[in-house]
Amino acid sequence: MFLVLFGTVVIAGIVGYLSEKTGFTHNGYLQSIIICVGGAFLFYFVRIMFGFGFGSPGMNAILSSIGALIIVPTHWRK
View (cartoon, rainbow, N blue to C red):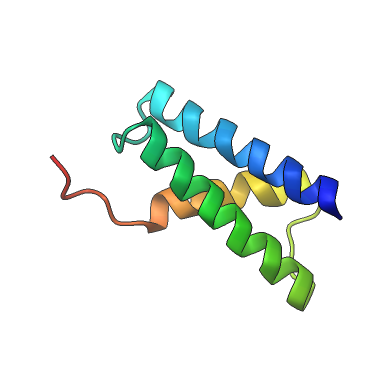
């Protein structure tokens, strides 16, 4: 269980970094990583409490990180 949580954080950080590197978002590296890790944590705990998921824990981390980047409204930033 602890290794899944640690892997979720690592995968979410990588997704946040890659989203900035490829130009998918323009939030800044640290902000995108924080958004991704927050979304992955939230979905990790939802998965534990309710058993809802997309399959493997890695796929859950990737999809929840991308979803958090899309949902968090940062389009008005300059």
